[in-house]
Every structure is written in structure tokens, then in C-alpha cells.
Image (cartoon, rainbow, N blue to C red; front, side, top):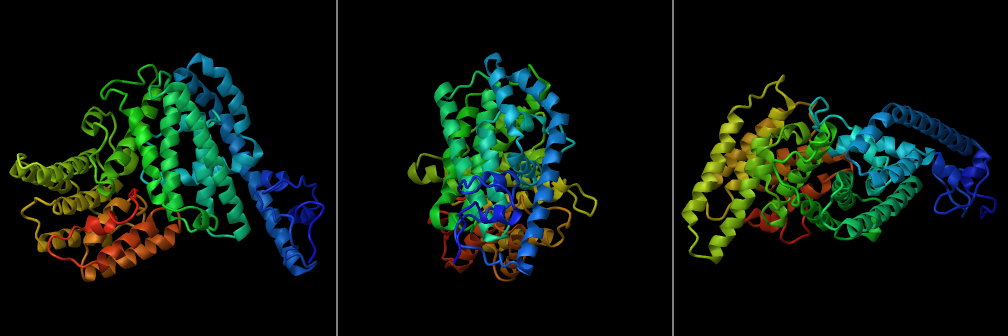
Length: 501
């Protein structure tokens, strides 16, 4: 069969000069279109209808890419002055020149489309319940930090490329996006290591701290998406990615621990304070929700952070602060429960009383949330998280009152809420409660949840933890529920740890 000797097949089709670069030529890469390489002649290049159809498709893709580039440039012109001003307010003088030089290269045409995809689609996937009208709603800091061209920029490009590859299209495009994701992921790791080497664990410069924390959190999302993706390259190259997020979380919490809760770390700039709140809130969220699978207590002083916070976690993650605090308390309770088995001097009755008090707080808080068609989104989300937390509290080993009928009733109440769930509210951010509720479900409850989760996976594709939690839940349903059976043994302790977000 014929092979291409004068450039890639895409450039030959478009009659463009090709630099023959690999894995994709610059002409194709700059325009965000598939580069069909230099090997065998594609089947569609038949000189007839298939070739015309492919040329038409590529022309449309080029046109769409040009529109994205123009949109990115317009947004950049509108936001750059404000973003650079924010950056200067909390950046050290010695980095100003470096950041200015880097930011001039970020909005190159070949990357503009990917960055716009991150801002328009990936951000919504990461924060499905984010309140743009709250004090956290200004994303100018994000554009400013991306404009530095540092590790966050690389991590965001990697995550965007991987997210795009989770939406099935032509195999060639999927492979190229995965290759781009791998390249930028590796670059992000290198730049983060360099940043850590230059600063240690303490960051005297606020901008560097923002860069490090935001990059680490983005890489956590990358690992979660990579673990659940069935994309061509990753299905053959990577294993155990469900656990690769933990080193990033440890690194981020290590940096946050150097800060003092209650202090205004962004006092020199109100804009920086909102950035600080955003990143601290997200870190606390990951730190607390990770405990159910890592079998450890939160690493951060979440109570001190949240009690002095000027924002509600519902503005960021949809779940009210009081419920998040209770979930963190349950993680500490679980750790103390393990200690009672090892140390007989610890009062198990006192631990049981703590469990009852946590459940009481959850029920009292949930009782204030009335669910109806006009109810705020946070009411629905917090109710489901609260019920999942109550069910979780009933599985703590020393709890004397966790009968099967009581747990069954809690799961039934959760299912009733999910059955009336408003179509306008995504299930994307409910991975943690859905997994807990699903693992404890029995009988007809399982049928409802299986249908719900199958539709959830169908809607989200490979973008998220849907496939992973469905696999975990089915394993729990198959398990023999002997007296004393702990669903976490089946769900987490025989497999790599999963971050349920």
C-alpha cells in the first residue's frame, strides 16, 4: 500500500506544507485536528465520496478551532489586565519578569483551544456545584496562574486532553490526546519537583504556594480520571492509577499544614484571600472524603479551618460546612475505634457516645433542609451526604445499635430522595454518598441504584469515578454478608484506594 513521503496524510488532503513532526505535525497540532501520520494510506483517501466527507469534517474542525482561538484571545484581552494585577499583588518582585515572559506564550493558537476547554468544560466537571455568585466565584486568579506557564498550566493541559479523550471519537484523535496528556503530565511533575526543590515545604511567596497547591489538586483529578478511563493508551500502559492520587494529596496537605488556621493569609489582597479560601476548601474536601478508603483520619485541622472560614463549603462543593465537619469527625471516630481494639484502657463507651452525638448533629442539620422543587441545590446535596454519613456511622465496629433494619431504613430514605432528584442538579459530585449508600443497599434497593448508576455512567462516559464505584458496589452486593461483615473490607481493603469524588 502507498505510504506518505511528503508529509502527513492530513496535510496532503488539505494541500498544506507539513514539517513531518511526530507524533503530530505542527500544522495539524496548531489547528487542533487529527494528524493521520505518515504510514499506510488511510481508507478514506479514495479520491471519491469518503475523501470529500473527511475533508469537509476537517474543515469544520479547523473552523471551530479558529472560533475557540478568537474566543480565548478575546477573554484573555478582557481578563489579562485584571489577572496580572491580581498576580502582582501577591507575587514577589523577583518573579514578575519571569511570569510576564511566560504568560505571553500561554495563549498560543495551538493551546488556546485546550485552555478554553479547561475553563468551559473541565472546571464544570471538577466543581459541578460551584456558586459563581459567592465570594469564591471570581476565577481571574485561575487565568492568572495558568498564565504563568508553570506546573498548573501543564497539569491543566494534561487534564483537559485526558478529559477530551474520555469522550469517544475517532481512535486517532483519542491516541493523540492521550499522548499530549502524558507529555504535559510529565512536564507538570518535573516543574513541581523543581518548585519544591527551590522552596522546600515552606513557601514564603504566596503565588508559589497557590501554584503548588492548585497544581497538586489538578494532578489528583488527573489520576482519578486516568484510573476510570478506558482510553486506548492508558488501558495498556497504566496500572494501579486508583492509588496514584495519594502522594499528591499528601504533598498538598503537607504545605497547607504549614499555614495557621484563622489567620488572614491573603490580608494584603482581598483577591488573594478568595483564592486561598478556594484552595483550602478543596484540600479539606479531599482530605476528609479520602478517609473512608484510606482508613485514616484527616491530616488537616479541618475544624479550625472551617469554623473560622468566611465561606460555606456549599459554595464550592455543594455540601454545607456542618455536614462536612461531621464527616471529618466520623473519620476520627473510626480511627479511635481501631484504637479500642489495640488498647483496652480506651473507654469504648465514650467512643459510642461520640458516634451518637455525631449522628444527632447530622439529623438535626438535615431536618432544617426542606426538599421541594424550589429548594436550593445545596439542600438536596447536603441531605444525601448527611444520610450517607449516618449510614457510615452505623458501621463503626463498637456501635451497639446498628441493626440491619435501621441501616435499611436509612438507605431507603436516601433512595426516596434520589428518586425525586431534580433533573437540573447533576449527580457528578455525589460519588462519595452514592458509593456508601450503594454498598449497603439490599434487595430492591440494589435494582434502583443499579439503574441510577448505569444511567450516571452513560451520561458521564469515562469522565469520572462512575465506572469505578459501580464496580465497587457490585462487589459488595456479591459478597457474603456474614455477622460482623464490614462493607469497607470488600470495597477498599482488597484493592487500590479510591478517592470518592
